[in-house]
Each structure stands twice: as structure tokens, then as C-alpha cells.
Amino acid sequence: MKPELILNISVDCVVFGYDISTKSLNVLLIKRYLESETKKEVLVDDYVLTGYHVYTNETLDDTATRVLKELTGLTGQYKKQFKAFGDPDRLLNPKDLIWIKNAEFHERTTTIAYYFLLNTVEVDLKNNTSHAQWFPINALPELGFDHKQIILEAYEDLKGKCLSEPIIFELLPDKFTINEVQDLYQSILGIAIDNRNFRRKLINKKYIIALDEKQVGVSKKPAQLYMFSKEVYDKVFQKNYLISI
Amino acid sequence: MKPELILNISVDCVVFGYDISTKSLNVLLIKRYLESETKKEVLVDDYVLTGYHVYTNETLDDTATRVLKELTGLTGQYKKQFKAFGDPDRLLNPKDLIWIKNAEFHERTTTIAYYFLLNTVEVDLKNNTSHAQWFPINALPELGFDHKQIILEAYEDLKGKCLSEPIIFELLPDKFTINEVQDLYQSILGIAIDNRNFRRKLINKKYIIALDEKQVGVSKKPAQLYMFSKEVYDKVFQKNYLISI
DNA sequence: ACAAAAGTGTTGACCCTACACCCATGC
DNA sequence: GCATGGGTGTAGGGTCAACACTTTTGT
Image (cartoon, rainbow over all chains, first blue to last red; front, side, top):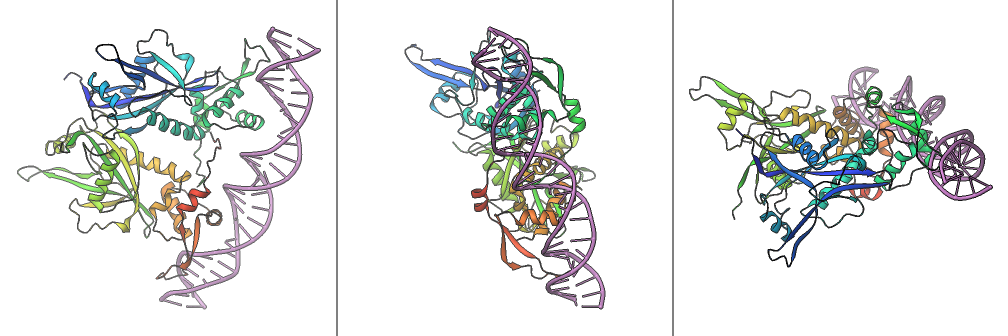
């Protein structure tokens, strides 16, 4: 049996990319644009998440991986399935109906939402056909379908998860400075963190490894570079049963 | 348009029930039994989660609520959507195929999994037609489909969540003793907790309110009863940005 | 009176927070 | 030499973990 599309199930991907130079946590969105037949009127002009239907021979994870690869060329990035969205009216705004008419979409589609973590420099947006673009999480454009809600729920999940799991490093390059990690936490959580305390805390972790290397090409005092070792983390990790309700 | 079943999307419910007298965290399962036409052979004899297809006019939450109500009569219980399961082969074990042939099931069904929290005494299993039965989370019977995996992932989510949110009280009666809360934490987490430390910690919470009441009908020293106040919790609650990676 | 579970205090270790100045480098 | 961000130490308070005996009640 040849793989076919499952028309009422899709996967949508919230691609989080951190831009280390602007210290901005961004979301990758693709343009949705449609003119009337006479080209007199713009019917749809907004952004949506990247996503696609599931094929009959794919797992949901496969679909998410495929969707990310098609847009960015990347594989092996951190991904998490965080929620399914299936309200009967989630695709039924007027603009969305116009759009659906033009695509092979079922009006009652349930989407399994994933988020990905990466850094923006890994993605080359030059020759992409979807007019994909990064938007800061705090300055999102007008969004189609229920994608605003999906993004916000992904963001909430990320906020919680980055406090208890070392996923922050997925948003950074392999080699980073302590202050870059701090900036990133501050961007995600929207809080100020004391530099001395944060620094001490991080450097004391066995899985934060100081490299024999410093920043190059900066116009100020170059900072010490570190890396995160997943191997050490897995070895050192032990479950913490602290009840904090 | 009349509501119809969406044949390839279902909701499955992991119903967690705490039995305060046996100190056991249980899962509610329903019997799956099928004989061959000649009745000579038992084709299927195991247990599955309760679940059902989504109707076209329902949200996923609606479906979960409906499924729980149909089995237990209960509404308004704590519920959480925690994961979607959609592997192409998740219903393709030999027994499952036999079963599916007998029901209106699509072979490639994606299920949105929820878990519910309640206490076992709320459920009357006497006159239920599904042969529903409680099983301790640590002594599950043979399970159909991928329901073992679904239960285990629900349990992992519960373990994590009960450390950071006051959902433990959903598993207890309205009035409870401190030691009952401790027993429950120990059952869920599989750890031993120091009674004095735990007691002090809980009693110091403003939202754990001592009642003017003690246990009755116990054959030993009756314990002080407490209640959990969601109102006070919401008022007192403040987000904790402690980074513990 | 006895069995059973309820309830009670102290100490030391660790971790978090708050806080301000000097240092190294590139320009 | 100066502007910029990198890097550094200490003290006080709070929270967690460890630990064993007394009290209250029903039978």
C-alpha cells in the first residue's frame, strides 16, 4: 500500500530559534498570502506555523522531523511533542476558510503540535520558497488558524522545561560563554538574574566544561568559552524529589 | 450537519484512582474479551483503557469528559491531556487486529491521551457494563494496543507534576490527614519521606487549612483533618524561577 | 495495660540572595 | 587612556535532611 496523506491529522511545528547577537528568542513563521482572482483584493496576508499532514506510514515524530527538514534542511534538532489541538472550530475563521478552500485540507483537522529548539544561525533563509521569517516571541505578527495559541502554549511549556532540564543548550551554539547562557535564560523567562550567582552556579556543574579557548573577534575582553556535556549530565543526573507546591 | 464519529481519532483516558485504605494508586481498566465463533477458543482476553472516538462537534476535552462520565458517572474531575499516540503500527498486534475487525475502528487511529485524578471511593463499579476494574499501577494486567505505554507515560507525567502543582489533593477526599498526603506521595513517587519534615512543610502552607474536626471511626488515636483551599493557593501562588538543571 | 498510630524540636549542612568593584582587552 | 563587558567574594537567611521519643486514643 502506498503511503497516503491522512487529511484530518497534521503536525504543526513551533520552531524556536535563539539569535545570540540580538539576544532574541524567535519563532520561525511562513507567509500566507492570497489575492482574489481579479488581483484587486488581498484575501489573506498573515503568517502561520510550518506543518503538514501525516502520511499513513509515518509516526507523528517522523512527520515533525520531515516538516522541519523540508523547511530548514536540519535534522537531529531537539524536538518535543507538547500538545494536540483539535477544537472543531480551530480552522473556521473567515480567512482560514478561504485558505483551506485552496489547499487539500480537511475543515476538521486535529493537529499534533511540536516545538523545536535551535539557534537561528543554523538556518539559511536565503533560498527558501515559503518566505519563512523569524519573529521575536514578544512581537509576533498576525497569525492564521489557532497558531497564536499554539505558539503561546509551546512557549509556556518551554519556560517550565528549561528550569528543570538542560534544554537551554539546544538554543545555543556548541561553544558558549556563561553570560550568553544568562542572557538566554533572561530572554526566555523575562526576568533579571544576578550575574555572580548565576555564574557560580553554572561553573560548579560538572557537565559545564571550560574549554581551552576564548572568544575571538569581539572588540572587548574576550570571554571564556564553555561546552555542555550530555554524557556527563546523564552520568551525574539524579532525580530530585523535592516537593515544591 | 449531524455529529459523526471521526473514525481515525480517539481519546483514551488513564483514570488514576487512589485507594486511601490500601494506600494504592490504581488505574481503571476495562475488560476486552472475545471468543471464536465456535466458542472453543478465547481469542482476546485482556484489559484496555477506556476511550472512544471523537465526534465531529466535540473538542478533545469534551470527548475525554464524556468518556469518563460514561464509565464512572463523574464530571468535573481533574483532567490533563498529556500526549498523542499515533504510531502507524500501534494497533497492529494480532489480538488487536482481531478486536478491531469486530468494532468500528480504523487501523490507523491516532489517540489523544488524557489522565484523570480521583479517589476510588467516588466510583461505583457495581453496575457497570464494561467490567471495569481497578489495578494497582505496579501490578497491571496484560494490556491491549499500546495502552501499557500510554499508562506508563501518564504515570511519569503525574510523578513530575505532583512535585510542582497541588494536584495531589485531587486524589484525596476533601478532608484528609497529613499522613494520608504523605502516604500518597510515597505511593506515587515510590520513595520514603520523613514524617516530621513533611508534616512541618505542609502545615506551614497557608492553603492547607486545619479543620475543627478529627477522624471518626478509627480504632486508634484519631488524626487532625485538613482541607486544601484552591482559592488561597491561587492567591498565595507565585511563580518560582529557580533554575535546577 | 497495651497496641497503634499521631504528633513533636533541634541541629548542621547547604544553597540561595544581595550586593560593588577591579580587570583585561580592543580600539 | 578609555570604554566595554568579563570576571570576582562574602555574609546572612532560609530551607532541607537527619534523627527518636512521647502522647493520645480505642480496645
